Image: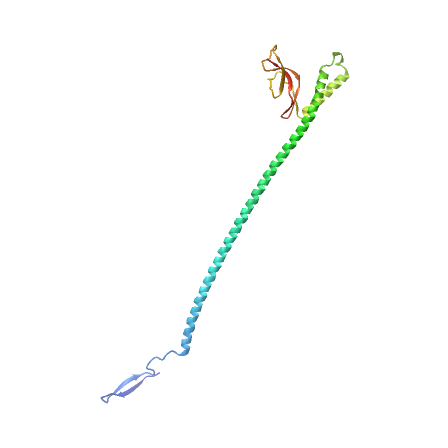
Length: 221
């Protein structure tokens, strides 16, 4: 507003001009202005509270994720341990089965061998009879057809034994071996070195690594 000059008499009767404004002092804030300031403060406080809540929420979410990761790691470790346990169990079972299979095959082979040994042991006297019969034929009968037939049967029989793993022990000239030979006499009148076999009195037989029967022999003394 426009200022006005006002004359005021003083004690001496003179007048003094003063400049008076429309308002001598600043009036107090209007009620609407105070409410706006209060609302601003409240809004700031509300924003701070929201920020704190968001921070707490983020912290809780991070903690939850950390816990979930730890739980997943524990579950993974447990699963890996269980898988390793299953693998080791399977490997043990496989090794046990392989050992069982080998043992079963070995036992089956031994049973077959034992059965063959029993049969062959029963046949050895028959083989001896063939040997005696063919080696003691009188001279007048050697050209007979039946003698040739008996010799042929003996050869076939011995060939079949050899085909099935039977080894004949006829050790003339070899060094005496107590595991394969049985000495029943000593020859002193011989050109062979001492300890060598001079005569086979009865042939022996071997099946695999088993001696079915040692050969009966005479040894140079």
